[in-house]
Each structure stands twice: as C-alpha cells, then as structure tokens.
Length: 321
Ligand code: SF4
Image (tube, rainbow, N blue to C red; front, side, top):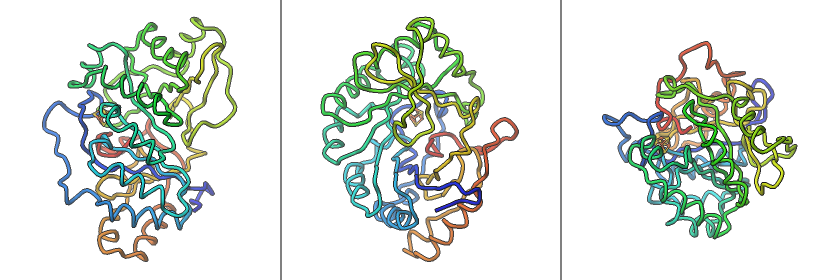
C-alpha cells in the first residue's frame, strides 16, 4: 500500500488498551484520567477483522501497544491469532515490563517476534517518582525472565529525559554489556505531557557514552521495524540505538499507521487527523473499511510538524505511542 509520497506502508502500531498499571509523569496526570469504557475499546473480533483486511492491503508487521498491552486479559490469545493472519510476518509488543515475569513464557509460546521494554532509570526511587506507582525490581525481573525464556529481539527503551545523569546513561547502556539485548535512547517528543518536559539530544548521550566507553561504531543493519539507528561498543553484547524524531527527522522513510484502542486510524503520531474505523469494524463492512483506510493513507502527511504546530492534543497513552 503506497501513500501519496510513494512510501510503502506495511506496518501498523495497534493499541489494544488505553489503560496502564503505571502513571508515568510524562504520560498521564496523577488523577482524573478518563479511560475508555469496555464497549468503546476494539474487541478481539474487531481487531482480527481489521488486521485481516489490513494484511490484504499489504500490512506485514504489527506492533501491539497501549497504554500497557499486558493489562488486557486476552493479550496472549490475541497475539497468537494475529500471528496466524495470512500475510502478517511479524508481531512485536511494547510493554512497561511490570507484568512481564508472568507473561514471558506465554509470549514466547505465542511466537512473539520481539519485545520493547520501557526502562527510564535504574534507580528504584527515581523509577517510583517517574511512574508514580511502579516497582523497578518487577521490571528488571521481567527483563531477566524475557532473556531466560529466549524471547527474541529484546530492546530496552529509555526516554532521554533532561534529568538523566551521565551515571544513569551509562548504567542503562551497560544493560547491553552482558545481556544479548539492545538499549535505545528515545528523544522526548512534544506530545501530551511531554510538551513540558526538557529532554536530551542524541548528541548529548552520544558524547557521554563515547567519553566513557570509546568509539561508537555505526551498525549498518536493521534491527526490527523502527527508525532507530544503532551503534556497537567494543565488548558489549547488544547495540545502542537512538530514536530522534526531532533532531534527525525520519519521516521520509515512514512506513506506518497507528490504530488507537477505540479504532481510530492515525496517519502520523503528531497529527490529530484520523479516521474512525469502529463503525466499519462493528458491522464487518469490508468495503467501507478498505475505502476509509485507503483514503486515510492518501492523507498521510509528508512529515511531522512537532516544531511548528500544536498537533494531537491527546496524551501518549491515548494515542498508543
Ligand atoms: S508511559 Fe507507558 S507505562 Fe507510563 S503511564 Fe504511559 S502508558 Fe503507562
């Protein structure tokens, strides 16, 4: 499926819930969140109808996101069922890791192709402060379990907050020293509550790592679906990646669409231009669905406008970042 800028769109980021078992300060307010009602969230049947039809249009890769996807009860059978959809080649998951110890084995059995775990700090007190309610040790034991059961393509995502000290950056990078996993530093995006948080650039982190460990050598191969660029460090098992939507705009290679938990197709993380698919999914109206998907993809913007305009006013957990 090509968009109007001749980009092949073959990747969907599918949010399966807007709920989460954490309350990260840059994502949700402490109180007063209004979550979707169960009936508003796409059902398993609606999701499968959607994915089957997207696969017919050339979607090959699905990333399951949230909110926190492991808070959704049917998550493992849902992943298994998506894996079985003809034309879908890869299903991956992004998680905060809080429930990963419990799910790692089942996800491995469901043949999940990759997992991204968000860890913004290795300091338990700071972790609690950022997530308001989270216990770091649960996430670390989830990560350990994921490595132990042999989940493939494990990546740790760290938001490059302005508060990250040199020590903290190095501690996180060192997760890849002995573990066959990759660490990615993600530039803070001006979305939702992220608009008011200061962040570090790729260059800031790069220079901290090089001064501590020596040269970061570019790793030319792709590791998964995302726009990260990766580097190797001598003596480290995994790679260090950077995702910098602002500093190094990667929109020219954008291959993705997003589906929110309530069935809205978003053509760009930043824009609030979207298309409501829920009616077509509820009524299994294939013709309407394909027409809506096609016309939304033709409206996919050439690039984001993070620096010039307000963009989507929803929070990250409501978009499915
Ligand atoms: S950032 Fe992720 S883990 Fe934190 S509250 Fe938002 S959805 Fe949950």
